[in-house]
Image (cartoon, rainbow over all chains, first blue to last red; front, side, top):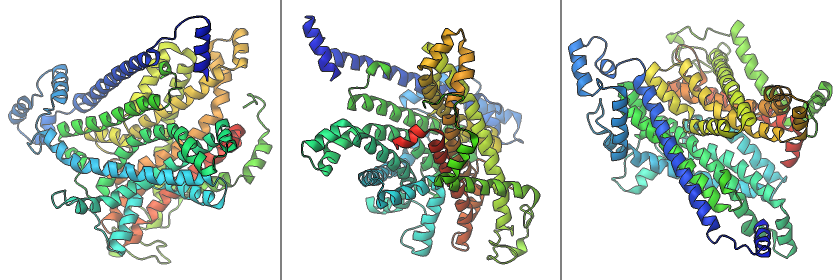
Length: 341
Length: 288
């Protein structure tokens, strides 16, 4: 509404509206966001490097144990490049992050990038499966409860979500194992066969972990969806749409949902960090050979180079997803003042 | 929110309303139950939670051991009671860290605006990239696992939440007319923040702190389950679940009690938070 008013005003004053107004502002906005993204990533890498490399304790000494001979420790220090100044090692690592050459694992002796890549073939499908389940469950529950506001179904589902939010996801996972693996023996209690035997056995073993991750997250997202839909249902344009003869259902699907998606999307972005953290925990519950297991094995092996790169990868994923959500936010809702973001 | 500082309803009226609010009462009872368990464990437990008695391991529930014993022969009820202590301790300190740092930074951001605000908000966005599990992993790799690791990791992740909530609600207060009046009366930013802004956002902060406490309990449980948090022989609910998981086929019930304890504590805090929000801020309650 405001835009038309402004437009007419300009006509009145015989000032042409800038033709590329919105796109130009959008690209400035995108540029600023990209720079912030880059700065955030560099900042994260700096913190991770400082915490893991600059704190007391020589990695070579840790690897060889307390009773190793000083000569051997010194030789390993030189071999691993740990004798170089801190700043140089940081820049070296940063260069490696860009080029993909992350060095070799202390414990396995294989390239770190290869090690991580191998584990991601399990962690990423799990995260996607869990996020998909979360979205489906949450939207269904949220829309159903909003459409049946204050009726018995609404109260029932909302009580369920209250319980869902209170469940620790790893305990829910253990309960799922108890039911489906111990009692019913439909699925195995853990492990992952890999993707070599086809997609089905792999998906089958990711099913329980994904459900455990999704149910708790969906409980939160369902509540957000419900209140977002309810907020939009109170808007004037909904009444107008009803007045012009659309049924409740048509209004809900054609007008309300699109407008209610913005808060839902924001929370989904925030939940992604939770999901990754949850994946690390859940992988340990089901003994899945993913990124989370790799990190824990590496902590036990004092394999700091693997820990450092894994933590960086996880932090970077969270940062990038939040960046994408921010940008989508502006794309979906042009009313959002771009300069304020 | 028309009511300003000083016109809050009398305490009696508040309690009368509170006792009629269902989720507040249920939440408060659950919280008191957990707190009571922790306090009780300081003076009395049915058995010692530290003494190992392998001869009576994995006993089913009986009149001597109400919920049975674990793989080391320790009494489950005693372990649950003492475990409540670790949960509450980690929760209080971690939320304390987040509340103190977060509220200070948020108030500064709202009062100063300009680049100070920009720096603080970017910093808080940045901290969001490190979930508690991630910070705990880094700290555990460097200083080893333990209660300090879990408290620090959870505390750090709480800061940006409080920064955002404080900044948002304090910013709204700063735009109000009575702040303008206070400035016209010659009060400085610090005095206005302490005398007018903070009292007006206190109820929002109390509600948020309750909800964050619930999240801290979940994080603590996950960290001690993973072996990054509270270390044995100190009993903790997360650790008990980890022990129970290796015995799922022999004694599945061991995996049920600690998880139920965590869920009840978290449920209690969430219900209490919801109740407090309705009671302290009637405007928000009507919106929902």
